[in-house]
Length: 332
Ligand code: NAD
Ligand code: DAU
Image (cartoon, rainbow, N blue to C red; front, side):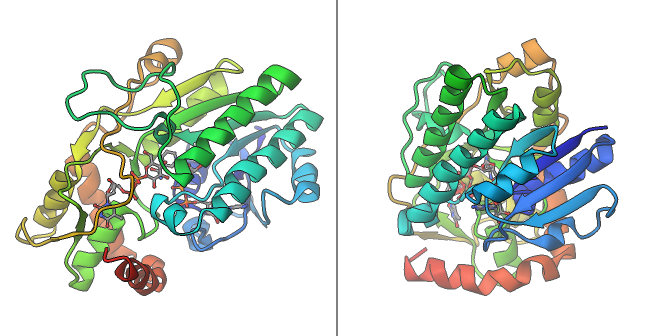
């Protein structure tokens, strides 16, 4: 049994990871989360109090971070500003949390010699052409496009520098697009599901040819736990599940699964600087650490996710109107 600190554990992927730890290990989990607009305590509500402790606080708060690191065995760092569209509107919080926040954790890890796993994104590699036979690997050069992805790239480089210069015991992972329960309604899949439930037309940016490489959040969690247990310090691991789909196909699949005509959506203003395609080659994680994804069937995983949003309207409804009002100001 170990004490694990999870930053951003009230967010989408962090809360799925906390559920995963409670269900698959005997570790005690402390969640550090600022409860920004993206954090939701309801995502942790059904977890046993003797397994999970919640601390409301900011990862840039050095004294608080120092105190928490002094009594934890390892840290998994999910906290971030995570939404590309928001980063185009107001980049500043992305620099504060993703860069300064990660720096604050690294200084505490250095002081207390704490094992740290840093969660990052495939977006640090930029994008691929639709017909490019190559996929991202751990040696693909960094080439981020958005304020969000550039701050995530910066955070990755800080972690690598603290490993090399100060011997911080850290690993990194860069994962592709997650789907599953507890995802904020600003994001593509929950936005379209909740639009259909509300009788609003789903919204496809541009022509919808952009490809994302979908992975279930539980597969992301199992990969992170594998790296935490068996990963080589200083190493980076790409996480994916061979889930490439273009946005048009995904929106049509959602409509079909929800009993709607598959053309009942509208094309809206495209995202500025919109990355065309992400695709992950996770050979290193598979061959060196023996990890494989469990969710092979995207359609089944999507159907279960749709059912989760149907069953949990109280979880997402408070955010829905504000998100749609924000998108409407941008013609999206
Ligand atoms: P999210 O926006 O749903 O959750 C982020 C969480 O971090 C929220 O609970 C929020 O309150 C918290 N937070 C934000 N700023 C904070 C601060 N300064 N101090 C403390 N807590 C703070 O994000 P997500 O989609 O769950 O992403 C989690 C991590 O995974 C991020 O690092 C992201 O870059 C990475 N990632 C996400 C995806 C994806 O598909 N969503 C894919 C790969 C990697
Ligand atoms: O690749 C990993 C990344 O995946 C993570 O690092 C990010 O934190 C996460 O938000 C996600 O980034 P994307 O920008 O790919 O996700 P998003 O859900 O915002 O959009 C997915 C695709 O759908 C993208 O091509 C834009 C498009 N889109 C999005 C919305 C919100 C639409 O067509 N319509 C929409 O309404």
